[in-house]
Image (tube, rainbow, N blue to C red; front, side):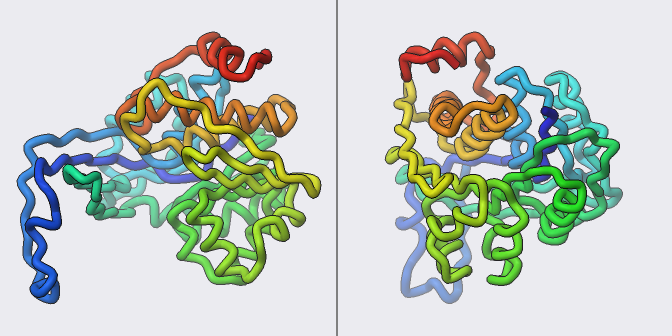
Length: 310
């Protein structure tokens, strides 16, 4: 099965402030806030949900198809996709825009201040899903609002099962739009916070929403994850990472494991465990795409943690 990844491609500009924000922000002066933080450490990472998910699927040995929009500054990302052996046929360049970018500043207490520029991501609706892509599975990950709505409609029209992963874009949608996403999607993936927000927005509990899908997956960080499917609740254990370096992109790595398991025809316990393993592998490296592991090594780690074959 070829998996279509609809979502964002972005650059993550990550800066470290060697101090504490609270020492520079005066609560009584918050209404006239004007601060500057010296950040001697800065790095630029390849990111975006579609880019991260595709990267992890490639590590697993899959050949995903990325559908995204990028700006005039995307040459380094195009070159990266080529190096990874990932097709850029469905990555559209939008003239006079910048590729989506996040500017993240972290202090010594791990507090973060983030600014996000969507740029070309706002034009994701310019990409259309057709039968020519030969996709048999897809994910609608965080992207431009109109693009996410459009791609869900197109996938339903083409009878292609897809996973709805609203991520941080969940607040963009109304109650009716979220219910419609749930009705269209075959699978839903949310983290703990997004799950609570989805419940609040729709007025329905997750186990009730799960009855309208093949599976609803809830990730809970160190507490593992839960898969609601077929009227059952499956608790998936967390895989202990060799070290916890950076959580950026862990959710995307987890979703890659889910998509790989679905495409391979794994049962849900195995699919969830593979997803948990991919998240643990990622968290031991900085950035969303700097971990490197072969399919054989993933299989060995799966055997080590779960005493069964992948």
